[in-house]
Length: 156
Image 1 (cartoon, one colour):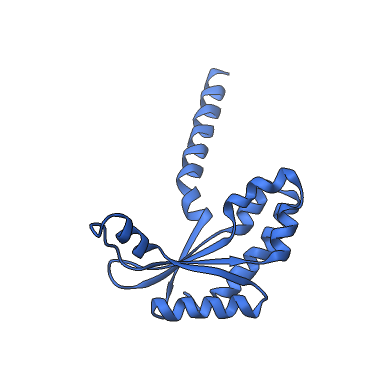
Image 2 (spheres, helix red, strand yellow):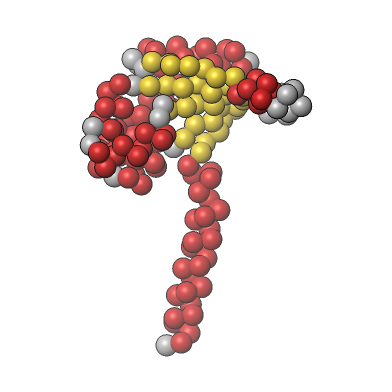
C-alpha cells in the first residue's frame, strides 16, 4: 500500500511539473510572419475590421521602453495591436462575476521583431482562457479565438 501511495504522489508531482512547464506554450502562441512589421500590423487591422472589430490603438511598446528609460533601453520593434468587439465584450462582462476577465481586454495581438530581424506574431489562446472560466466567458472566448485566428491566417 505504501508503494501505491508513493507512486500516486510521484505521478501527481510529475503531472503538475509537466503541466506547469507546458502552460506558457499552451496559453501564449507565436508564429512567424512573412511580412514586415508594418505590413503585418496592417493585415491584422484589415482582417479584424473586415470582421467588425475595432482597433482602439496600436502601441509601439519599444518606443515607450526607450522613452521611459531615458534612451538607455533599446529593443527591436514590438507593436501591440489592441482589438475590441463590443458584442463579445458585452457578453463577457454583462455579469458581475465575469468582470474580472476585463483584465485581458482589449484583446491584444503582438507583432514583434526578434534579434535576428524576423517578424513574429503572438497572441493569447482565448479558447483556453475561456475554458478556465467556463460559462458565458467560455462561449465568448470560443468566438474570440476563431476571430483572432482569422486575423492572423497569413502567418506560418
